[in-house]
Amino acid sequence: MRHRTQTPAGVPAEDPARELPEVPAGNTAEARKKKIALLFERIITHGDLDLADELFHEDFTWPQFGLRGPEGVRQWVRAFRTAFPDMVDRVVEQWAEGDTVITRVECTATQLGPFRGLPPSGRRATFAALGIDRFRGDKVIERSAHFDLADLMRKYGHTELRVPEVDRP
Image 1: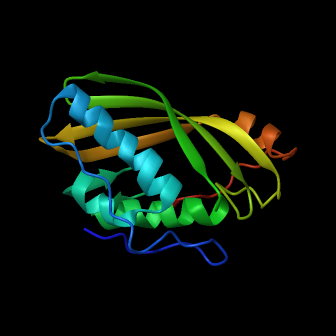
Image 2: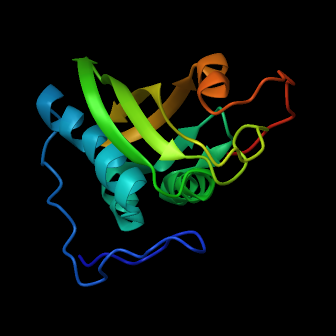
């Protein structure tokens, strides 16, 4: 499968001839952790949105944002990369138990767009995130993502805490 370039305006596109990485087969704990690492390190960091079809179940749900299916993942990644177009996610550690994988990620990026109700700051910072992914067979069926919003605000120079109305990515 070839990479289809889908990046926010003003973001350099990846090489469209670049091959997508191989998705690990099976539903072992190690295979599942590697699949989630691909979400962070390939889909989010490099914009390899086509991989969503390989990793996420057609009935996938992301209840936090009301998103469904692999297209819901692509929708969230597009919004996230609009806020942080130079995002680099690095998996720090992972745990797998039963059908669930928990991943701690280090995120480094410049905030050039709004995120969770926070206006663009133009600052570059590193912050932590935690992903919880539940599998059905060899694909993710449900996920949640967690950020320390106060820490993120401080690092990006936001000084006012206003609870925004946010129902989508």
